[in-house]
Structures are given as structure tokens and as C-alpha cells.
Amino acid sequence: MDTAYAYQYLLIGLLTVAAIGFGVAPLVLARCVAPNKPSPTKLAPYECGMESSGDPWIPFNVQFYIYALLFVVFDVEVVFIYPWALVWKDFGPAMLVEMVLFLGILGVGLAYAWKKGALEWK
Image (cartoon, rainbow, N blue to C red; front, side):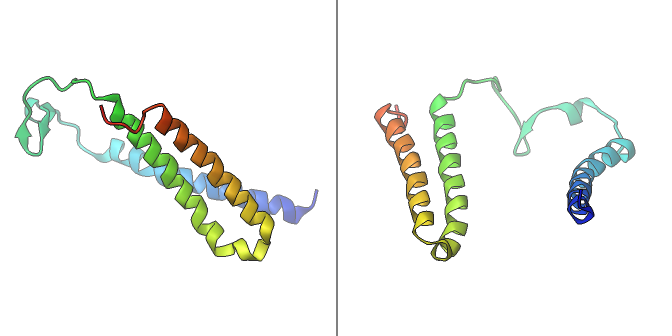
């Protein structure tokens, strides 16, 4: 095995460990250092500085979740289209065909959601 090739994987591994460490270290440090003195006042739920009233476990309309899911799907689509728009001329017509196919698949998904009535507010 080529040592330069293995060295690249070692660097990727070290960066992965460092990224995980940067995420976990503050959580562990806060758990170890922060004081933990619960009281009824601290444990009481509140909304916007006011005491809450009513049952917090009310059912939400599933329509909110469908809209959120569709938003995420099309938001991720924009994340893929932006870099493509910057480099598509360098790769020729094959890159254009691939993006048209990608947009077509997403369009079929949108048409399906529209036909099923997922975009109609009831």
C-alpha cells in the first residue's frame, strides 16, 4: 500500500476524531463543571417568561409536518443546484442532462404530492 495514500486516510480519520471531539467535549465539560441545583422554580415549565396554561400535549395537524418535509426536500435541492450552476459549463452537456433528470425526479415527487392533496390545507 502506498504510504501517501494511507497518510491521506490517516488525516481524514484525525479530522473526524477532532470534529467529534469538538462536539462532545463541551457537553462533557458542562456536565462535569456546571452546578446542578434543581428547584421547583427552575423545573417549572414556562413560555416566553410566562407560566404556561393548559395541556402541553395537544395534537398538531399532520399538515405542518408534510409542509416541513416538502420544504426540507426542496431546500436540499437548492443546495445541490447552486454548485452545479457554477461548474456545469466545464463538464459539457452530460452534466446538463443529469441535472434535468434530477429536477425531473423532484418534479414527479412534487406532482405526486400535489395530486394526493398533500399541499391542500384542510
